[in-house]
Length: 286
Image 1 (cartoon, helix red, strand yellow):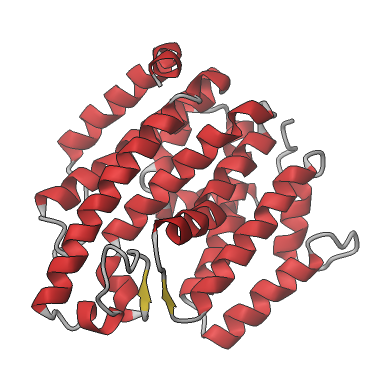
Image 2: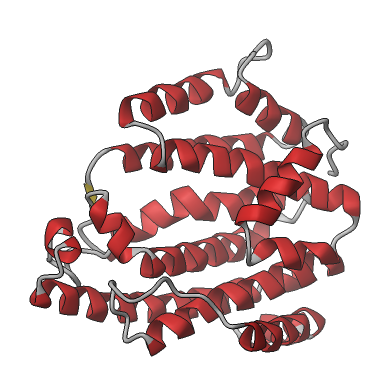
């Protein structure tokens, strides 16, 4: 299924270019109409994420609940619910995945400290694995390959968490599981030495787990159309590269925000292209 280009496509593309610094360049591999659909998907997911992260909690909660309530309302006037309905008009499982994304993001509106790896995996699947499911829905990817899409979303979310440990702690959140990092968000944000060290150890373990899920995700590249495969493969390598920068910073949550240098980005992009061209090898090597 390919979605007809909507009136919000250009605005969505600008939003993706501004904020999705790993994926937006990789999306240039795709034909314009497909890139527009991906940009529209990015825009509704980004808007929902901003409601969880940037809006006052009561406003964010009310707005996310309103979108969720109108998601299956054929006469909705909510622009996000309407855009989601338009994107997934022929793929109800994509709309279901967006609903689960909203449910996952709603958890961010309250202080959040995850208990263990299982809770972390469930959270990551809700806020990022669902994005992989939605991309599968947009491009009619066989159901058998959705686990790999979910794995890749989980890997990218783990990278996000590893990069934003301090910022999340300031917001009262600790996504690093208590079984690996028992420190409170206040202790991490306050630079207590034991808390900073516990966060660093847990972050390195998180990045190791992410690497495994990146491998699992690449096993599904073979199912994607070539241009989408190129975009996803390059974006995955660029995102995974953030983890290598975090490791070089000793996973210190108070180090400068991890940014992949240009030369490394070029090397990673070339590796991603090779991943796409030799996708069958990744599928067999899993």
